[in-house]
Length: 326
Ligand SMILES: Nc1nc2c(c(=O)[nH]1)N[C@H]1C(S)=C(S)[C@@H](COP(=O)(O)O)O[C@H]1N2
Ligand SMILES: [Mo]
Image (cartoon, rainbow, N blue to C red; front, side, top):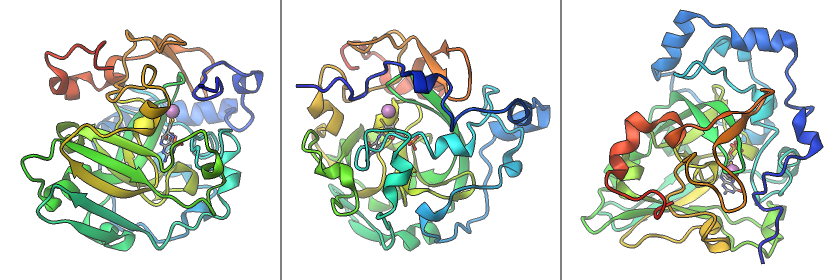
């Protein structure tokens, strides 16, 4: 039985002008300033200093947004305000209520953290989170995030290409897929007591998708360490796929030979396929995917094929029937 509230896009009245997401006219002016220089900056993925501090991620409640004032994604969209990015979250390990997740993370202390890279590789390794920050320099990536429910955000992540980690692990030739597993801490994550889900959260990518330069492991957003509600201390971000593929709080990355099972496919295979590429032409069985609500905007906008990243990733799916492989 599928509870209808799971990934349900029915618009609650509270969502139409969510209090925490509402932007004042002044904010709009601030975020929406179109300057050629800012557009150019956003089009590049700039290296930032490798100095992400090891603060307890959940302690961060605000950032200096002036640093990114006027910054846009490469399509000219403003960044979603920090407040919305960190107070409107899907993170079912904590709660099914998006506006409640942030407040449910008080018991979650991500550090110390270890990330295991194992399976069909020549160099299996378990990293401490600090090792990862030291080893891989963090760069800023401004990506659109499109939830399968029909809303989206533009988020300035800090992170590094997953490919760097995978190359170091040195996959064997029979490694065809990558399996990701989230942390299991029921004593810190109240939602993991919900028996409707096969915990821990799991995801998967084909190895060429995982090696693509757009695929990153994120360790921060808005220039600061990741808040707990966004998947502290390290999470996957795959911007051309529906948001649920971007698994949070990852503890294990395993190279495997067979297509891994995923949490959402095991809940409802006909609704949440393995690929889950953003595709306005492939409807969810219960709703259309042709448009989306950008958080902070008043009218809906068209959903773009592969979430606007088609020119960069379409080669991955040449010759594939995207309706069969949804
Ligand atoms: N472990 C885990 N990862 C997860 C989820 C989750 O519930 N648990 N939700 C997914 C969904 S549905 C979305 S839309 C994004 C939301 O990421 P954000 O809260 O950082 O915007 O995280 C994804 N990763
Ligand atoms: Mo989502």
